Structure formats: structure tokens, C-alpha cells
Length: 216
Image 1 (cartoon, rainbow, N blue to C red):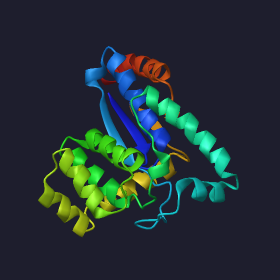
Image 2: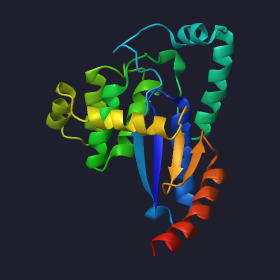
Image 3: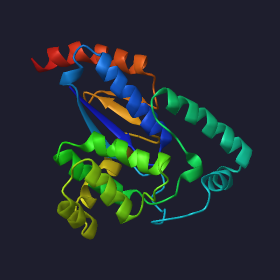
């Protein structure tokens, strides 16, 4: 059974959602027969390669709220992340365009390390305070999960996988995805948001018999 997930590299709820799904998959009886495929989605497609404006200040201005309210939201997300082994350091986050990161995730899928690269990019942005829109950050993350440096350089120097990223974004629009993470289970069941592991496991358990019957 295949599970498709639309998410962005700079979305904290996406990483919590991914961790929740991995827990659900581990607890699911047929978890080793579930294929997880990550798809591109950009929350901030107009972002520059790098913007050093403090994240709290930028979000407060974007949403018309106060830095204190943003800090309170971040505290909640940080606590949830800690429960799932994710260290969120929003004070270090450097805004950047994620298009190239998504292109590398398509390469990583072909090489069998897509989920590993997703986690590594999340650590770069949310924990280590590395500029997610800059090539050096992407090269380092890619090397850490075993991607060939020459192939990574080729992707970054060309428009390789750009079409695939656009296709993912278009597909999300076609199925009505307005926020991420967004899960599609076996091409039939849609689920939005960072659902708890128990809810995700229930969906897997409900979808599995229908999948086996429908494809026997």
C-alpha cells in the first residue's frame, strides 16, 4: 500500500506529522509493506534564497499578531516536537526558498533515501539554523544521507527535477490541498494535518483490507 504525503521543508507541523506517521507505520501490522512517498509543496514560494529577518518578527508581521503570541505558538510546537525526538530551535531558523530542497528530495527518492533526506533537511533548518535556500546547506545534507556529491551538484546547477516539483504542486492544487501535511492513503483516503499516531494507524488499518480486496 502506498501513502503519499505533501509537505514543505520549513513546515514544523509537517515534521511532527511525519514522525507521527512513522510511529503509526511501525505499530501497524503490515507497516513493512507500506510505501511512503513525499511530494513537494511550498508554503512560501516567493521566498529569497536567504532572509535573516528573525522568524518571530516576520511571522508576527505576516499574521498581524504580536511576537509574544508567536513565541507561545512556538513553545507549543517545540513541546510536541520534543515528545517525538525533534528539537525545534525557531530562534535559529533562517528563511529561504525550498524549491531546490524539493528538487533534491526527488533525486533522493530515486536513490532510496528520500525520507532520510527529509529528516536531515528538517534538522538543518529547524535545529541547526542552516540556510535552507543555500546550496552549501543542501550539499551537506545530501552528503550526510549518502547522495553522490557530483550528482547533487548537477541537480543544483541545472533545472533537473523542476518539472517534478511543479507537478507535485499542481497535483496538490487539483485535489484541493490548502495546507500541509496532507496524506493520501492508497490513492483514496485523504487526511489533513499532523494527526496523532493512533489516528493514522486507524486509517491504515481501515484501508488495508479494502486495498487487499480491491487488488487481489
